[in-house]
Image 1 (cartoon, rainbow over the protein chains, first blue to last red):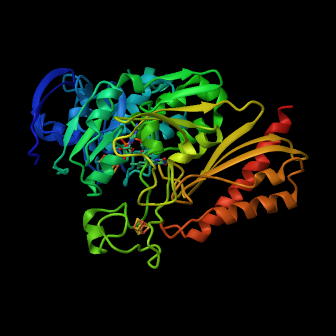
Image 2 (image 1 turned 90 degrees about the vertical axis):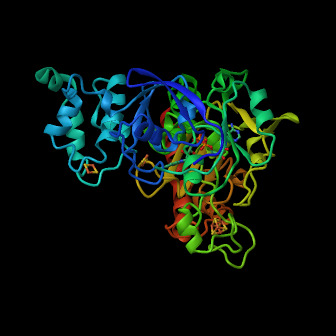
Image 3 (image 1 turned 120 degrees about the vertical axis):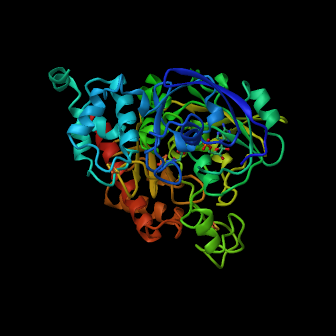
Length: 163
Length: 328
Ligand SMILES: Cc1cc2nc3c(=O)[nH]c(=O)nc-3n(C[C@H](O)[C@H](O)[C@H](O)COP(=O)(O)OP(=O)(O)OC[C@H]3O[C@@H](n4cnc5c(N)ncnc54)[C@H](O)[C@@H]3O)c2cc1C
Ligand code: SF4
Ligand code: FES
Ligand code: FES
């Protein structure tokens, strides 16, 4: 661990304003998992290849495994833990569950956060737009079709039927 | 928990502060980190200080100039793709940017980081453990090159997608260091040496890149890669043409992924003022064959990459000339 001096990092994580003393060389994913102790965000590769660690920074999907915590000063971080309210899954989470978009579940937090980012910007994406938004997220279980179906289940008329 | 090397991070708010902080040895710039951080995690490079550019607002602007567009080094690829002027006047740049890494990377990956990208090789972009088991290589810590063992130069491939597209638009880069500011052709920022492909000095910052508009040209970018998304180019072609199949008025071509630097294809002037017929296409293919130099730096065989580069150039030229024709 770093000998370099720690600094105070001020940011918002899932709606909560935080101040933590962190070393300069701690990755954002490690900060979230080890310091904030929310472990929904997963690490699936040795850096930047798989998308499992995707979180939102100021609403934009970002890989927390190749981002430094200290670079996030003043930012608004959202992780998979932010989606459920009062113990109820969000509709997107619920659809990943029902449509078998999640199997072993390891890629799921990243898949859902990348999909969440897309849906906030575009509430009626085409198949191509969904595929493009998730191009950096790898899944070894589902074959992707189920994931596409899960995201599609929350858009347009499908969503209205559900809510 | 992942242990990164022991470095300090500085977060300047201005370019002046940033270059002052980066003047010392063992310091490097951190932009989006989508290339640098994977490398640091794999033990490639051991900087003592990272100068994080992400808080410098003056580097994130895109401004129109008299003859084109000036793009800040800190502009993200997502910002670039969404820019209306890029979409309207710089199609080749937009097409290239859209193919870079994955959607998630493009929200943080920057133009400056892409132009200053480290070269790549199957013996280099590996974990510390993997490289040490292979006795390292010339580019980092070792003595021989596993790609060309008889040579004494690293042949790792420059694999950035924006550089060729920007070369087509006569890109000039604004470089700033504690010694001052200079503006050079993007072409001159690179050299054919995989271990030292950038001609930047220690602590020199790419503050912006300026592109010139090309009126009356059709432009496009094509790349070949293993998967349809995310992957680096095994060969990438940026092109601008004016004229028709019957009369090629002008043609500019630049390539990436095939050499240790992005290259501008030379010799296309000889094809001007003629139809791009079978003979023309053959001559074009010969120019590519002679100038690209793919090596065994990727799992995909070099000979295949060369063949693909030739075919991509020929196909793209015909497609663009057809487009030019149908727009008349
Ligand atoms: C899975 C994966 C796939 C990828 N695929 C592609 C691809 O298809 N095509 C492609 O081109 N790239 C690809 N990349 C690489 C990378 O994501 C992009 O090249 C990106 O644009 C780099 O920008 P950055 O801001 O993240 O750079 P950083 O990683 O922050 O920096 C890269 C280098 O440039 C230097 N640097 C950064 N900014 C400046 C500046 N303003 N002045 C001087 N030096 C600077 C840094 O010191 C560092 O050496 C991929 C990366 C990953 C992880
Ligand atoms: S081309 Fe040779 S020296 Fe360069 S990275 Fe590959 S093996 Fe190493
Ligand atoms: S864990 Fe971040 S991309 Fe794989
Ligand atoms: S559900 Fe197992 S990796 Fe995607």
